[in-house]
Image 1 (tube, rainbow, N blue to C red):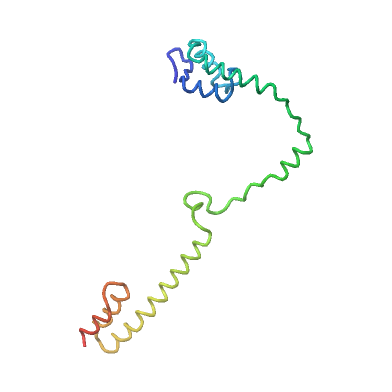
Image 2 (cartoon, one colour; image 1 turned 120 degrees about the vertical axis):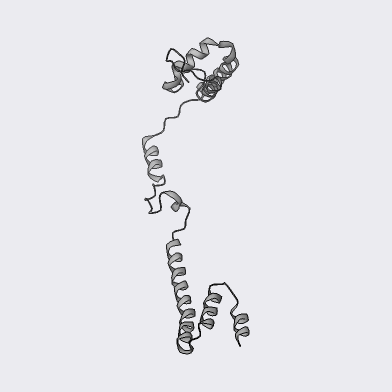
Length: 159
């Protein structure tokens, strides 16, 4: 938000969040929000007094904890043993990250099976219609193969 004088204005809830996350010292807040937070705290000190007091107590407790000096060799060995970033896969964007890698092979296999079954079903029907000039039986086989009818029922009625 901005006020008419072109200065940032933070909501009270955001200031409470900043106090809870960064402590009572506004100089520890993110730089973009320091000035606006300091102005709002100064404008309404009673509103933020309890949160600031609690943050000051916590800050004083944390100040009592000694700082740990991590040896450079330990830091370097920890960084070296950290997991490495994965190489970019070809399914990086979109729905590719949810799909298994074997999916294209499965799609090709189902396409091949569909073509083979279709050829095997339609070939006898086309040969039969060429020999006997009856297209009814060939049509019945094709419709049954496509799931539009029952071949046995149709063949019984034609006999």
